[in-house]
Length: 493
Length: 124
Ligand SMILES: Cc1ncc(COP(=O)(O)O)c(C=O)c1O
Image 1: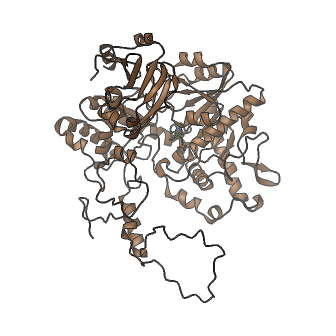
Image 2: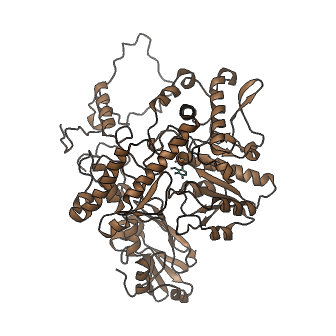
Image 3: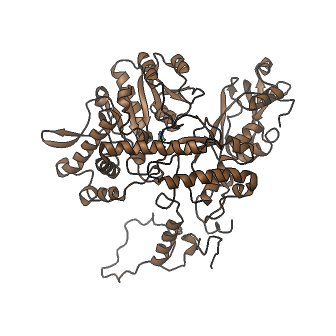
């Protein structure tokens, strides 16, 4: 069977659909030992359908799939809040050196001194970058870093016999993980409003901060891509009420070498190594969300923390640690990439990362503001949030614009987030892209706006030239097909 | 798009009064802003709720949003076709896409809601 699609002769059959009974990808020599019966074969099943295919078919199948993939290695990928920048391949290579890749977390510390030293140096560098010197690399994602940081805040209040502090104040613009982590850490979530500039409503915060406040969670830069201009006042309000300030530094890409969160009065923060430090967030692979705290709070950090002693490097447990939040040391290979990245760039290099990320986002914003509304029309940090409300009134929604961009080889921006902005299109160009690429994006966005009046169907039916065209997202969510069965014919549906 | 005989809340829910039973749903504006609704989570019949408190969740291809009850009282009926086939909320938000029926604790609460013209004015 050959299936021809508009995008060429791509064989779109799933591996399952290529199965031919009896075909296999291996030949075993005849057994030269007597056959043994399994002591218990009751768990063996023969009702599981597995593809029976040759090696070549497997290779072709996955090679073609990989070519259909839309990735940072092939396309501009301005997916806001995911920092899909170029991560030098050499960092992958370094993280894969046998001394780093072929070790086991249960090895005695004295046999992996170099690896622990790497973790200790990375902790120190992150402490320097954020100005918060107590660092644990244990958390496996941004959300887990938040969770760990909030447990540290709770442990601190308890150590002060102040256990009536049960509230986390969270801005309405926050990433969904913030309230979720707070709830999971046993805190009650109270929402503080944003003002019409997209900043935290300082008066509203003043009303909410009191003796029950455990922590205030500030995302910086905010999810609108803005620097919070009232941060010093905000931190004072929270501290005067006896609470701690938590900074969500997931998007540190805008701050490197420019601002230290600790200098602003922040007590606790996390950062996503899998955004800024050489691992992509949108990659779907493992993550790493280190938690950074003030010197005073370091004794509560999740274990293990790399430390240097007279006897060498050790993975140690801080004095009043909140305990382990997962097995072992965190995502070691992500940490190794981050370390390679930081050491290659140095302070000056890191600073220019952030400067270029900020300039690129502001360039796009300035060149599009006459066509698209800007959620908060002032200088932005590393990303700009467009609001396609003018386009929506003319019949084309943010979603349609995002789909149309795919036709031009541009990955869609993050859509409909932050939720306080109607028709949000969150664009993060990153520092990696050339001016030509940014100009191409700008030209395409302007052209799409023109198409609304000249040929709206081009946008409403997009994408046209990709292996899959407009998907029926509603049916996919309402009646999801999650498992292959012989009856599920994906090609004809 | 905004029937005259309904009352509206600023959270984009509507109320239709029959005796002391209030039928509640989301407005055309809410339904359009949400996009295709894929999941509706509603409380059990018999639940008591207060005016303006959260009574459920509505999920679209874009986002999950809380549902706030424009009136308080006891939930006497829950629309199972909205939970079973969420598309009815998009198709007929004022008809088969209604969400819950509430036995009103206090009919005066209706006075705190908007009429169609006032509600529509808030949308522009
Ligand atoms: C502001 C912010 N906080 C937290 C997170 C959560 O990070 P993770 O997805 O690694 O849990 C993200 C992720 O995009 C984020 O943008």
